[in-house]
Length: 122
Image 1 (cartoon, one colour):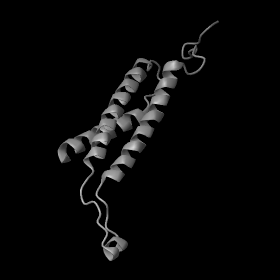
Image 2: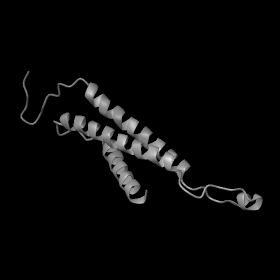
Image 3: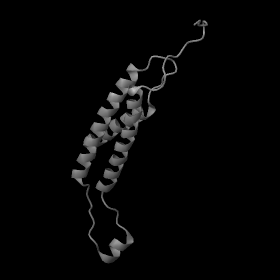
Image 4: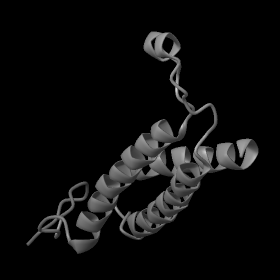
């Protein structure tokens, strides 16, 4: 088998278990972020609407700190998961055509921002 100077032979037959794991970690990270957003939405103070004013219904005016704490723990879990995925991704990043998983980078950044916001505001 002869190789030309600018040509290379890619011996990889397809994504191996590590590449698939990084892809799945990206999907799991999106799922965790969805839960964080949902929990945060449920924990925020309720908005008063016309019907609450009309019928004088009491609504919660403060944050639900139990749910916010749960979202905080999920953000820490998200960051740990993303770091593990990026470490695996960096070990498998050997060729010019290999790419880092953008979802893991984005989710880790959002998780860090969320942790900082939690520590500053609560």
